[in-house]
Amino acid sequence: MLAFIYGGNSWQVGLVVAAQRQSWQSKNPHGRVESFTLSALKYVSFFAEPRLLVLNNLLAYIEAEELLVECKRNDLSDLTELDILIAAVGERMELVKKHKGLFAWLEKNAKPLQALTMPTGERLGALIVEQLRAAGLTVSPAARQALILIGGDPTISLGVELDKLIAYARGSGQQEIDEKIVQALIKQETAVNNFALVDAVATGDQRSAITLWENYLAQGEDPYALFGLLVYQFRNLLRVKALTQAAVPLANMADQLKLHPYVVKKSYGQAKQFELNKLQNIYHSLLTLELDYKDGRIDLIPALSRLLLEINP
Image: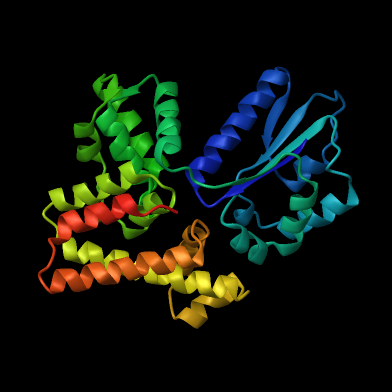
């Protein structure tokens, strides 16, 4: 087995790697799990015991090019006594840029090959419940929803925050994670993240979209400020989608749009959920809403709430 797992979220990659290791150990109870090194790869055991070599982050592996040479020298895609599990934390474009030859070889030869995308909404909630249950904990519905929203914020590491909650619960003897504990232990840098809101809208997760919007309002924030962020992000989606349809490579978009590469990369993924004409209609609806609000014809809060419910990818 030569397995290759990669994705932009370190928490999710770590979960899949742990599951793969556990599965391998259950099938090979007398086998050995070792950290991946070139010397371990070249080592030949006299006892022919099963071995699993694990490389947790390809991007941090300084001997990656030597690894490619070794992969080509030996048929590592058809292993018997030695299994290899390679993981990488990063998006495809980043990995190709860092290790083009090795990434291409792994993409062609690794079985299984898993390109992970961070789940959202109910799928993310199920994953959170599963990890907390594995730690012997339950989670209240309100806390679960709060953690789903936190998971949509790219400035917060959900894995670190869950470890923090687990450590607190074990230390205090508490069996359930409730919303009060989440609010006390997890510091959110902003009331809501416009990427998280657009993610919810783009995936049709209207419940999360409205919850993000309501949480923002409950903290006394200016609804017009969030509306401005929403207009800004949908404008980015429209511009990125237009360049995509014009066959402009993602790597060139940041320079053309004069935007930060992270904003372009995030917008590129979100824009895939929409057709160009759909984005044009949404953007037009947002502009119409703004004109009506400035002319005093509507109340912004209920009008934007209705629009969030009406937007579907």
